[in-house]
Amino acid sequence: MSVVITVRDVPNAVRDELAARAARAGKSLQEYLRGMLVDTAARPSVDDVIARARARVTATGARAGAESILAARDADRR
Image 1: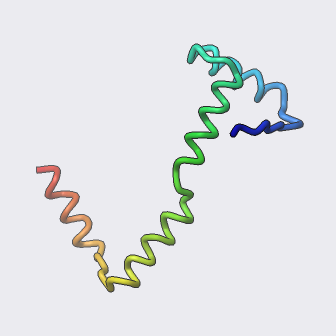
Image 2: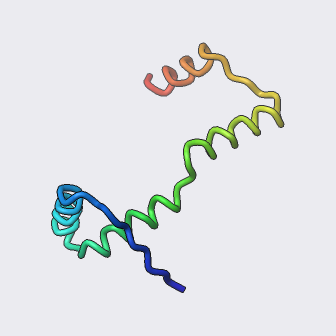
């Protein structure tokens, strides 16, 4: 089931920029904003990602030092 969301007091310049982006994407402003909201809701927040990473470290006790991280990064570049 869909709901209607109203956003008030959007500055004209912001609305104009979003409308221009929507037009360049071949979409209505409503379609464009809906897509942005769906995409945003599908991604976890930074706080959630950090909390999950901390929980994994706590659960496993595994820790990676800066040296091992940099070594792994550099190994992929060879």
